[in-house]
Length: 119
Image (cartoon, rainbow, N blue to C red; front, side, top):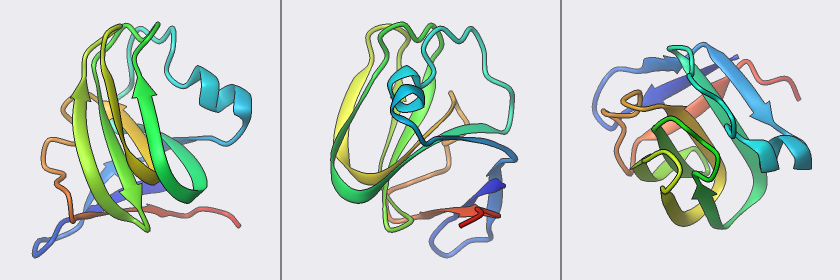
């Protein structure tokens, strides 16, 4: 599985080749808490099924991250969140958390697509 960035009017780029799905209540609650680092080309993906306002907090997350809120594969918001104190909220049916800087070229209106997802 990989996460592909499809920017408006430009070529696709792979953002992550190591993708973890936060697909249980426990994995969604834990998120990236207690991590001290993230590998390059890593993404943690939260799938929710329906779009509504979703929060991302950085409590117990000791590293900066890029968070991306997505509705129907279209980016709604991109935010760099600081360790321990970062917080942001936006509508999403999917949230992607990446190492800080990985989403530097991602903008609202772009598409982020998970390829190789088993149904």
